[in-house]
Length: 352
Length: 249
Image 1: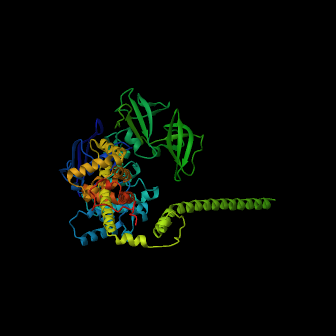
Image 2: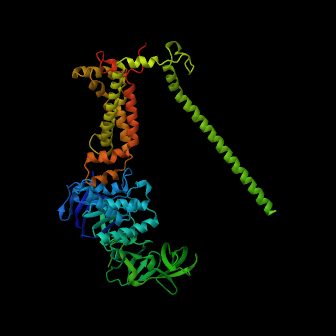
Image 3: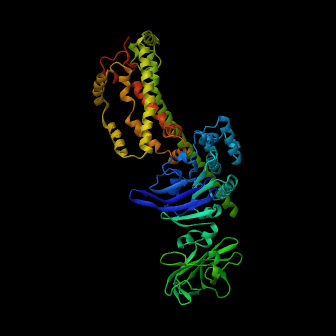
């Protein structure tokens, strides 16, 4: 187990800078997920930690040592790739043992280590098979096994669940989390899927355009998003964002309605964005924040998502699953004051 | 009424299925026929060659498959003449060594050009590829002069050297290495293998079909290439198996 620190990390390709000074401290044994849309720099960051990309500026420290100029093998890390990178011409045993090729262990010790890892990952019965005889989930486990067998200081996962179907992804998510609880190594996991990030991480690092937007626990990034991007990226469906302007004790929304708010931190005529998570905006009887006409409903079982036209804007709200509103109904939408997020419309930063 | 309609629909569906099956089997038959004809066309020259080897010279131009007077005299002549084994060994040695060298060097250069980024990579690749435009006939005399300069005349080295690496093989291997995902190589790099080990242990086994194709091309090319070798008037002990023009009895 070890710490990983990124200090003002920069990556440039020619004149194009893709990472703009990343600072991040990962504690020993922590499960950190880098999440963001395509092109945000999360995989580049991971590859730089692995030593597969050169550092343009800044430092990477693993276990306190600067590793910028170290070869990947000298960093004592293991990486699991998106397409598993297990060799089709080798058996499962050889694939898992591949990481031990350069180890000084005896053959008996290597075999014992492979057997132990195979046992943990329930691959013992499959050790003599070739990868093309395995299912997607089994291949994924082999890839993890190859990383585990070396007992590295840190595991790096580069979108390892992207190629799996939804059911298997959920299962593997759980298995990786259990594995982390069992082995306790530092894990840095890259994904574009915010559900994976929320469900697995001790801390989430949300990235966009080569910048870190927020670092926090799943609870923090969900309930206290730092800016509009984080607020809309985390959570599904995405947070409703309504533009408005501060007028006295209220915010006049562009959809023609106004909501009362404590405006102590707001200035008169300040442009703001009001964020409301769909599961916090409820279709209920009685006068609420505002009302509108239901344009589409999406039954989810327990709940129903209602797309409600409020003025010129459409918001997503949660309605009862048993007695959902019908398309065309006019409904009242309610939200608790603590569920309303405020952002500066110009900078996008949260107003707290 | 409804029952009879259902029955009619059922009959027509069955007849449609049967007609489709008939068409499929006809198409299959035609395919087999064409394949059979192709097979015959491929095998007949070899059968004739084999048949001719059991004929006397006067019968060589007869198209009959079964010789009127079968003989094994051609075989005994070739086997009794000691030179044949020398030629055969030369061919085997030259073709084998050249094939091994081609497989190694072409794949190594193709791998480097495909998987590494360095200044001039594209220019080097184009330069290698452009040598394909030079006809072999144009190279025979320079090769001879080179051999003469280095004192390689009448040596295996002189014969093999020009063919130890080919532009075609390099191109072929580079194209095949494009299909090897970079993740495989990077995973091996993280696992601690050096670049040569990655090429040999990871990349080479993944392009086995291309290696086999290249090996077959190069081996056959060298096995049958006797004309170029005889450009050296002094080449004697290294003459390969002259299958193209056997000595007349």
